[in-house]
Amino acid sequence: MQRAGAAAASVIASLYPELLEYPVAIYAGPGNNGGDAWVVARALATLGAHVCVEVVGDTRTDDARAERSLAEPMVRHGCAADARLVIDGLLGTGTRGAPRGSISEAVGHIIAARERGRAAVVSLDVPTGLDADSGAADHAVRADLTITFGTLKRGLLAGRAHAGRIVVVDIGLDASGGTEATPVLVDARWVERTLSCIPVTAHKGTRRRLVIVGGAVGMAGAPMLAARAAMRSGIGMVRLLVAPDNVPLVQQRVPAALAGAWPAHEDELRAPVLDWAHAVVLGPGLGRSAASRALVERVLRAWRGPVVLDADALNVFEGESAALGALLDGRPALITPHAVEFGRLAGAALDQVEARRFDIGRDLARRVHAAVLLKGVPTVVSGVDGECMVSATGTPALAAAGSGDLLSGIAGTLLAQLDDPVAAGACAAWAHGRAAELANDSRTIRGVTLRDIERSLSIAWPSGARVPRYPVLADLPAARWGA
Picture 1 (cartoon, rainbow, N blue to C red):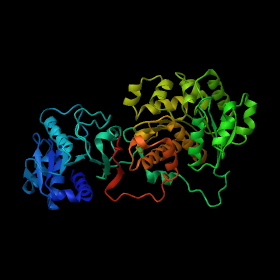
Picture 2 (picture 1 turned 90 degrees about the vertical axis):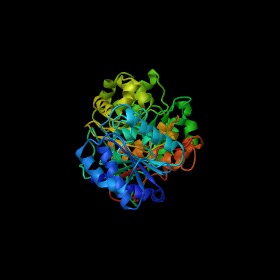
Picture 3 (picture 1 turned 90 degrees about the horizontal axis):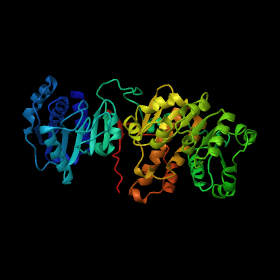
Picture 4 (picture 1 turned 45 degrees about the vertical axis):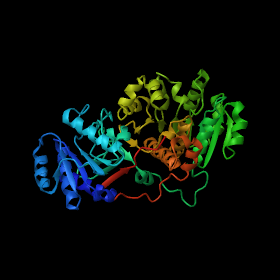
């Protein structure tokens, strides 16, 4: 508790030094979250801040009572009406459901203080009223900053709108991540460590070759988006296999790529795929016809190397995950569904997919013998062996047709270069989201297009990623990007 409170006070003092010149209002609840609040109160008072503590409920735990007794001589009771900084220490991770009674009233006061526009709100561990596992929020505090202790809670990622900026601080717990409870957070440092540098002696062959199969009539744009994203992700060469009528269009619009027609027979795959590719992307703009299903099967039977399946390459296997698994078994494979596509393939309702976002991918990964990148907020990558990674980058600018095509091009490139579907998916999800954040910088969502995101991808890759200053373990920006 002392480590948590001291670390939180350190973060608050570094991020809001100017607000400490005004009274600070702290809401201390009855449990250990309230105890954390009392430690913060004492630490800020020691720094010279004028701290007022609103005690909500009887202090119930021995640790919290001990911290209260140490802090009370240094603070005032009651809540300062002119506070510019409000600290929510009402309820922590162990609570479920909407706040009740005096806690509910206190949440209302915090919400009102923030809505008046005069006070910044900091929540300790989780915003009160936010479920730490699911992210469900019924009458919950909406924080500008959440300082969470030890590990990044699932609910904070699912409920980013209530959490604001999220700072994870070290309190001495063993928080290595990667378990079912705590998936590994993908950040710039992890991506930079995972992606090897392209050497000065590289040529287009050593940067690898990617084949993208898709582009039915009327949908030529999808594989072109994937190809351009691959080129901005470091691929050496790209070949597009599209509907015969689309070959001239693709050749004209993406002149750096090779282009050809869909193979009608397996023996037509030899030159463009089997003897050439390092990885294959199937699906962008492919269409959902019986002919599309036959084409996917034809390619997968002949090509036994790394593959990424997206969009219609998954939709044509609706309700037939076992059939897809039989085709994917024995190779590095990654599938990249959004929640609706996931539900179609797995035979699961949309609300079930979203409710089990952190877990449900593991089951499907084992069934289809492929890593599963479940797109959304947050994006979760699950491996066949049970590993789980989560990426929290991105903005609502990605909620547009064609966004997934960009991701498939990035993922195909990285799978060709890494040969590890979980690592490729995790890095691709992070870079895709980071490109959206850069494109969104200083602009509203309405002003950002996929072309903006595509261009930003070239500067999204981390180089010399900053190591957070102890005790900060991770620092996620607020997920608010304007209308």
